[in-house]
Amino acid sequence: MKRWLVVFLVLLLSSCSDKPNMERQAKTLNVLATTSIVGDLVKSVGGEAVNVTVLMGAGVDPHLYKASAGDINRMYEASLIFYSGLHLEGKMADVLEKLSSRVKTYAVTDGIDKKVLLRPAEFEGNYDPHVWFDVKLWAGTVEYVSNVLCEIDPVNATLYKKNATLYVERLNTLDEYVKTKTKELPTERRVLITAHDAFNYFGKAYGYEVKGLQGISTVAEAGTADVQGLADFITERKIPAIFVETSVPTRFVEALQEAVKARGFGVKIGGSLYSDALGTPGSTADTYETMIRHNIDTIVKALSHGN
Ligand SMILES: [Zn+2]
Image (cartoon, rainbow, N blue to C red; front, top):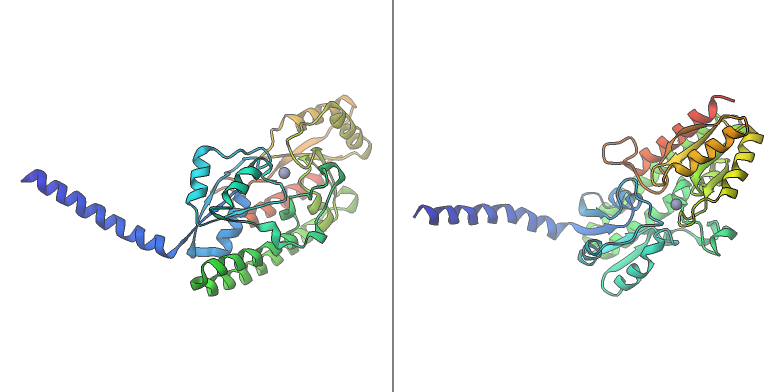
């Protein structure tokens, strides 16, 4: 009798806890985002109407990321997938291609006019994918995401459109913040040297000379010639600081610092920038907006002092 009662109670409890979940699933759209930056964009537009799963967490390099079997299952289970595109997720192109016959997949950078994209010669004719560093350019992806969500989930269209409008306003404020902070730096100090070439859009939008130790993608490692060439540049121009990135190993930037030291000049590591991944939840860079603020604050502070 007692055992029967326990079984009954367990069934009762499980049915109670299942019910709200089922209701939530019926109302929310299960969206998968490849990078944390794309995930934050979708959350900002989708709000409470979407449930976003992010594949690549803090510190993960999207250029090198390969989808695991578990990732592929999660991707098949999603209602739709947003990815960054422009070959950022270089090792996932085949997986995304295969998935597209079963799950709707969208590259958020399709929302940006190709005419304004950078196409560096050394990236084999491809576009530079790091568009989020020009805040105005990244704002172009907001309407695209909103349009996709409205089409798939028209019931919540009003919410998506409202969120998108508010978010673009916030991004305009953010863009102004980067410009205002930059003014604190004398023009000759606006030289940004980082672990990989992620900041070309940033440089173009906000007036910085930008150099990366590794190329646009991190697939090719920095060679001795890259280190020596950049060490000459830093010494000649008396650049006060260079920067590591949270999603790229620090050893190449440290080697660069050593090479500068060997030339009788001292360059400091000015801090850690978030380039292709947000920070861990609760950190000072766990959203796109806080990441951009962290980066510009770090850059301006480090380049303002010394040498
Ligand atoms: Zn990158």
